[in-house]
Length: 94
Image (cartoon, rainbow, N blue to C red; front, top):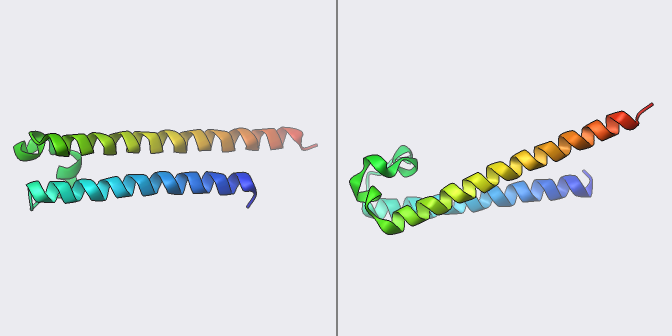
C-alpha cells in the first residue's frame, strides 16, 4: 500500500470515527430524554415530540447530519481520485 492509499484509508477511518462518536453521543442524549429510543427514532426524531422539541438533542442531531454529509462527500472525493489515478495509469501503459 503506497502512502496515498494509506492517507485515503486514514481519512476514511477518521471520518467514520467522528460519525460513530457523534452517533453515540446522540444516543446517550436521546436515551436521557426518551429511554425507549430506537435507532430509527434517532435518525427521524420528528415523530417523537420530546425529541423534536429538545434544542440540545436537535443541535447534536444537526452535528451528526453534518458529519455524515462530510463523510459521504469525502468518500466520493476519494473514490473520484482513485478512479482518475486508475485512468491515468491505464493511459500510460503501452
